[in-house]
Length: 549
Length: 61
Image 1 (tube, helix red, strand yellow):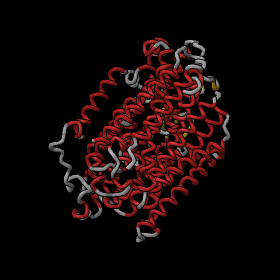
Image 2 (cartoon, each protein chain N blue to C red; image 1 turned 120 degrees about the vertical axis):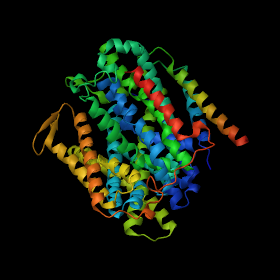
Image 3 (cartoon, rainbow over the protein chains, first blue to last red; image 1 turned 60 degrees about the vertical axis):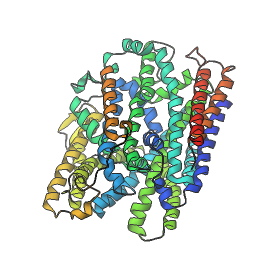
Image 4 (cartoon, rainbow over the protein chains, first blue to last red; image 1 turned 135 degrees about the vertical axis):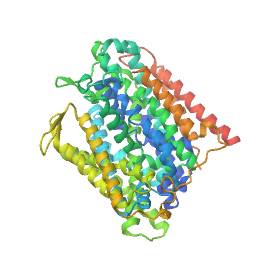
């Protein structure tokens, strides 16, 4: 792929605008709470799009096209059941407690609701995980630019790190959020033409259906048994593992996304943030997955485009970039690459700002220096931005050197995350749940995840204790690990809570269902109320699933 | 406070204009006969203009 000067002009223009937005917002970041939580007055259309964009990293965009080519339209499950229902749940049911508690972070909510140790566990694991995931995606991006454009690995890492640093250092969370919206627009406008062109060239959706096996163009028809579909998953593992445990665990508890909703200017806006984000989320498969499916169809029909081969199969990870090289003339190619860069930066800035807030408030203020003036925490927050990005860069190099360690760490992170939603569900909706219960539940849930991995194998991995069961795919194994971890955490939290002294009810006011005055929505038009909005989303979701049944 | 619609509108207006300018001389991409730069450029100009229009209306109000 070769770029012309106009492509570079577009890329540089984009860099200038993101830094310019940070520069414009620098005056608003004058206190720690403005810098780290955006002072709770960001308009709802901005928080909703940022809610979506912070999660829409480059790895997701590239990975979803790859999955589209590998698994077909079933990949849309990661959006339609793997994200949207959880987004509705947090908006309708959980946000009153998050936003109403006045907590500045998710770990801080855990401290208010449970105790110090539960918060410490969550804060520290979250901080480490965000840094690593930011570093890993940085590594992936630099490697891709090196492969596709021949750019120098070090320069890609340093340049992208420096630009994210510039705008988050200047304007803090607000600057990251505002830029995420610009990045979101760019991702949509930069990748939609690719979806349109590649699908048209493959003969439209009906042409694709003709050229590919039936299983690639249906979402639900082949999930009755794991050996019927290329993902190797069956309906229970898919719905309970992905649709419930993993999806709710991420969208309802991960501070990276929750932070965006908490920056909204009112309770009502905070609740609507994930609900409004659900509309574009639902449609994202058409932009990020369809090109991958079209790439496979184009390969099969001998159109002149072919997925690059890899062994006996294809190098799916190159689906997106090879399509761009074939369908985009110079000019639009610059837009496409800029969109890729934008998706990377929105993901990285999301990680860095979430890390900042958790480190400054939950670790630094919590354990290192509790009673300093606000200006001190602002200074620490800014410094943490620099340190966080430096550590991400270090992680990227670590990933380049030791691939196995990274795979291992990601496995461990999965074990830590799997039980989380059980803790929040019980914490928010059962006032009898105690701090000891939550802590024991989280630890035993993580232990259960490791145990299931040790006892089962998939694609030659796992079963490091003894092999009791073999899963048809790693995806199926992940889903079932999550199901076991969640169930263990849920049960242990209940049992230990019942065996320990309950929290004083007065302390739980505003934090738990039954002790919290729920927000009233009377006299508000229906399209601004959470429940009717959620109903519209569900109806649209059902229609989409029926179309691609 | 910065109205995000203004910088976004200007950005997409500029990129759209740039695409439009190169669309007349650019060779087509290998896999398509249509002038993709032209269509995307027009779409971006329209989107940028729409954002600026919204921003202007709310400023007047």
